[in-house]
Image (cartoon, rainbow, N blue to C red; front, side, top):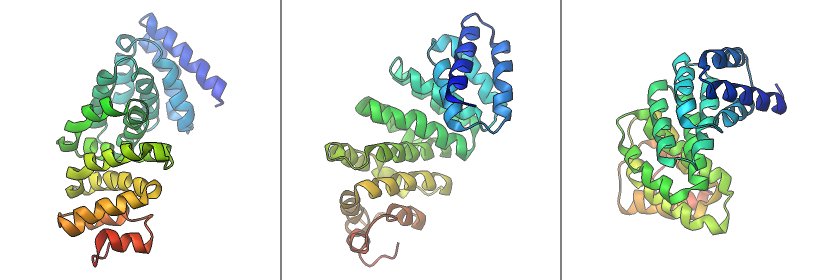
Length: 245
């Protein structure tokens, strides 16, 4: 599938949803979800669907989620990402609901990166305020998605000096999650630390030193290994002292 085809398919589905023809709309989408369609094309389809109102598309997104296909989550993420500037709180709430419903790592990562991560990039502080309760959510995949969203933010930042304060804010935000014990969540949160360390290594090594050496906070070994992935040997020593990450 090419970009133009994905765009046209998304527009056709959106038109059907506007006249309450969700059954026909799903018939158009289902064969694409059954194929090995690139996620970038699926997100493009979702982006076109998301151009219409949430009232029109929400039942359709729920139908996609209920099918539990791997390709359905990029479509949903594309639609919700478009809605972020229209209704940030509503889009993130739907995203959280879909993460819980999916109950699988790849949906949490897809929605965490391409919806929550995109929200952090474009609408930083309001998004962070809405995410505070996600840190202690009872669902492991919701907690994991916090880390994957910060991975996405860090990847998009590419270490820009002008974003250093935001990176510092994200480390403070992640502080209570450094002690996460559920391994599925640790992997996503550690991924966030890892990418922050790639682009802001001095900032992360200093922050880790405070958590590990000064405060001696408890942590999973995997969390520290991921966090120190991109640090130099000198930075690792600063971060963990005599601890072996």
